[in-house]
Image (tube, rainbow, N blue to C red; front, side):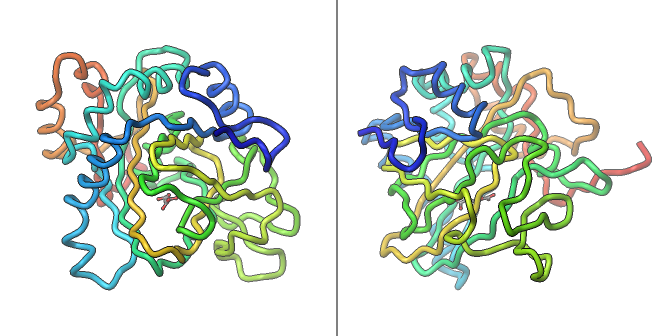
Length: 287
Ligand SMILES: O=C(O)CCC(=O)C(=O)O
């Protein structure tokens, strides 16, 4: 069922409403596509997130565990690049220009996890910067699946609609932290705000398993504390225009090369320019 009650415009769509999905992301910085994944795929992806992250999660007291190259190690997730309902949305978001895989991730979040502070994934390319700044300056929209469903109780996302534009002003009563990375209450220490409930204009993202959540690279978002009882499993990927040329990059990681080599001829055009990710890499101001 489509829910339009929180905002005065539609932000939930069926998978066939491609122009409407793109228009919503362009105008408001996010959209939700209902019931994109079949049940079997949801269950296989849950198993994949567990396979990749559960051992380390069980051996650790940390509540949140992340794979930053999930697509490279999950053939099931990679197979979404041949799932036409998913790819037709990716192509529409990019106005049908040639695309390349930008990045991917999976997250395993235990019940009891605290909130994640408000932030934008975008960051300025001011030296020294890391791989995240390169990959989040590519014009990519994140395409996420929260495989158990999310809301404000179960460690769901909070987002600020319309916060995806370069000149967006901080919410009333708040000002930006350094490099506009987050915001803090005026008069408080300049550290990222960690409460989801008290930010003017913010909304909880409420989604079912199999729904696709899309948000733009500048859209401000945070995560509610996980007060549910089930481990929250999620995974996402993004694409950018193939014409995107980063001004500097890291050597292609071996895992990324292996992944590219493993892709079928059908998928190859989407991964030939894939950069992988190296979080140890730092830009150089000499080049
Ligand atoms: O945990 C989530 O759902 C979102 C994570 C996130 O915002 C991030 O890694 O930038």
